[in-house]
Length: 171
Image 1 (cartoon, helix red, strand yellow):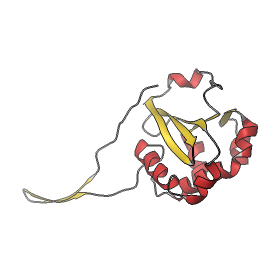
Image 2: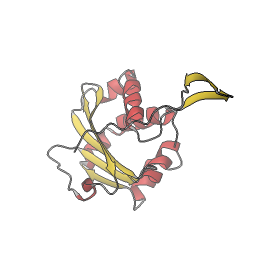
Image 3: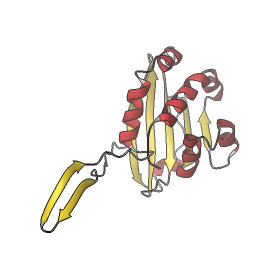
Image 4: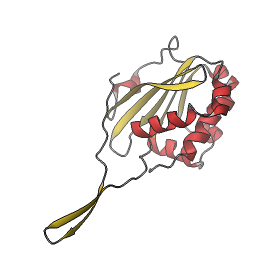
């Protein structure tokens, strides 16, 4: 997997009056869902959240979240390391869909769990339109890995979802 940073330039707040352009500088707008800047923002929230720190203190594991067919026509594979009460982004792999990882088997010796779904399913999960059970029974949502170990840490994974849902973002 390759580390790819592709952040679009911020929109510019500019008014044209004849040949003079008056610019107010960059307009702050929320990051789009399933972008690296939003993932980094989420990590900042999680790693300062006392409840998350407490729930994840005893876990040392790697997880992958995979999103197929973002609005930009890309696939994203985000690999995270949960350790010592922290969640760190190990790798952000984004490229044209379909990505080669769609057909790669899960290496259970390195990764605790991997979830893969198309962008609209992730949006439904993030907006609360889908719950975890809805996702699990959806044929377009794929969970691989140590299900029992994930269930033991369900409160921690729920905390990640809660904090992610609370972040301002664009879909």
